[in-house]
Length: 74
Image (cartoon, rainbow, N blue to C red):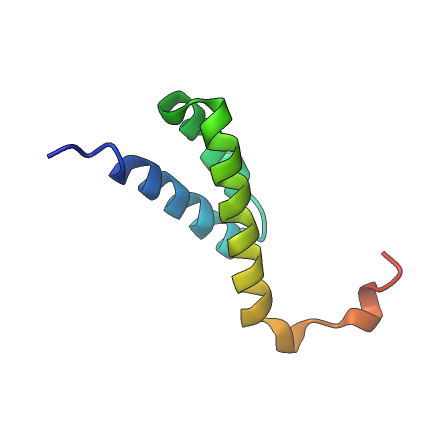
């Protein structure tokens, strides 16, 4: 059995875990390893799409704590 699709999924999971625990680092973790497995033209869009999905889910999860009035000027 070929474990090739499992390795990038594990790396993306570790990046998502880092992002959800610390608030940053998903792309740092994933882009450090994925380009050597998949190549840069494939890894960059995958990490960007995963990051967008992850941030959307985290925003939905913590939407009750989001204070727009405190950050609207930024």
